[in-house]
Image (cartoon, rainbow over all chains, first blue to last red; front, side, top):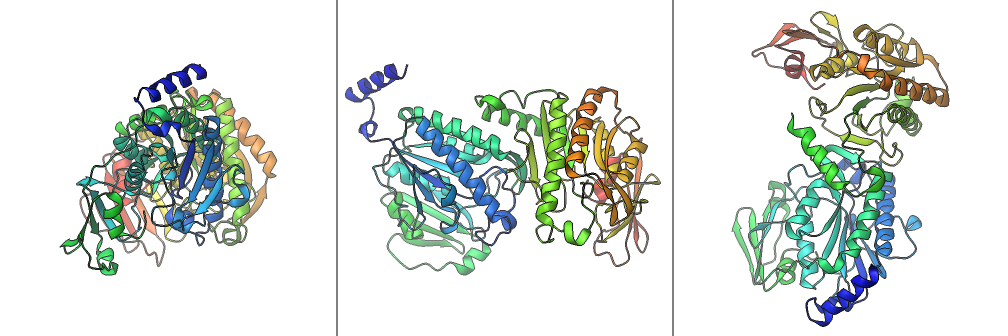
Length: 291
Length: 294
C-alpha cells in the first residue's frame, strides 16, 4: 500500500504535478504554544508564564501533548522534528520530559522564528484562536490586553493566520493544529485540508469542555500521524503581494503603542495603524519585531 | 438550549471520528452530568488548611482526594453502562480537577465564570452530585454552606430550606433529569434523600460539627463510591426527577455584613427586609436566575 503510494508520488513529482518540496527531507517545524492544551481554562492560574500557581502542571500538559505529536509525526514518516517553545518567551516546554529525538529551541530565534525553506511542514501545537473568535478558549492575538483586531489584506487574522502566511511565504504547508474547536476552524478556513486534533470545546472564552490529558494525547498522536501521511496533499497558504497589515489597538494598546515613523507605515485613525510591504514578511516586520 | 448539546456532540463526533478508543464514546444515549465539589470529599474537614484553592497548605492533598473520589464515581458510572461522563469542576474557581489525573474517559467542564445553568441540558439522562455540601445551618454537616460561605445565611424555595443540593436537583428536574446518586457526608446525603428518596448515596463522612467529624479512609471511600455509582446507573430508570410546581418564590437571607446585596427592585425582585430579598418567577429557573447562577 505504502509502496504503491510512494510510486504514485514519485510519478507525480516527475510529471511536475507536485512541487519540488516533495523531495526535501521530511523535516517538521512544531510551533508549541501554551493555551490550547486539554485542561487549560484559566489565564491567571494556569497560563501566565512562571508565576501562575498551576504553571508546572501546564508545562506537563504541553510537554505530554508535544511528545504525542512528535511520536505521531515519526509514526507517519517524519525524519527530523524541531520544536519552537513559543509560549511567552520559551519557558514552557519541559526539557527533562521531552522526546529525545527532537531538537528544541526557545523563542529567541530571530524575526522569522528560525523558520526556513528546509522545512517540509509546519504544525501548530496547543494553539489558541484569534482575539474575538466565537467560543475561542483564551482567544487572543500576540497580546492579552493591547490588540483588538488584526486584518491582513482585509481578512480578519490572528497568530495562527499570520504564521500560516509566513510558512506559506517559504512554500511550507501547515499540516495540523491541536487546540480547541475554534482554532481548528480558524486553520481550516485558510487550509481546508489540514488535520485538526480538537481537544477542547469552548462555551465562552474561559469556560468549556476538555478531554482528559490521556485522551488528548491519544487524539493528537493519531492526528499527527495522519497529517504526516497526508503531507503531499496539503498545499502551502500563498498570499499574493503587496500586503497590508491593519492593526486596531484596544484603549490600553493605544496608550502603550509607540510606532517609529517609516516608509509604508500609516496611522489610519486614533487607534488603527496600517503597515504595507511587498509581502507578509516585509509588512509584518514593520509592525512587530518578530512573527 | 437545544442547540448547545447538538453543537457539542457533533464537534466531538467530528474530532473523534477516527480516534480509536474514544470512538463511539460521545454518541451514546446514557450521558451523565457530574457536578463535583470538595466539601464532601473524604478526609476534608478544615476550611483554612484544606479548602482554599491553591493557597491552603494542604491544597494539593485535597485536590488529590477529590480527584480520587471523582474518578471512582466516573469509573462506577461507566461500569454501570454510562456512554459519556461530563464532570463539572464546580468547586470555588475551578482549580481542583486537572486533565492530568482525571479519569481518561471523562470530559472535564471547567473554567469561570460558569454559565448560569451550568451547561446542563436535556441531552443527558442523569445527574450525579459528587461531594456537594449540606446547606448552611444543617445539623452535623461538614463544611456546610449554601453556595457562599461568607455571604449567605440561607435560601428558601417556596418556603422550604434549600442549598446547592436542592437547587441543582430542581435545575436537573427542570430538564426532566433525575439525580441518581451522590457521595458526601451523611447530612448532605440526607438532604438529597428528602428530595429523591430512591437516589443512591455513598456516605463517606459523618460530621460532628462544621469542621470536625469522621471519615472513611480514601481507598475505602473510593470503593464505596464506585460500587454505589455502578448500582445507581443500573437503577437510573427507577429514579424520578425532582420537579416543583410553579410559580416559584426564592427567598435569600444574606449574612450580616454581606457584600453581595447588589439587587435592584424590579419585576419579580423585592426586598423583604434589610438582609432578605425575594425573587419570583413562573418556574424555578426563572426565579433563581433573578438571584444568581445555579
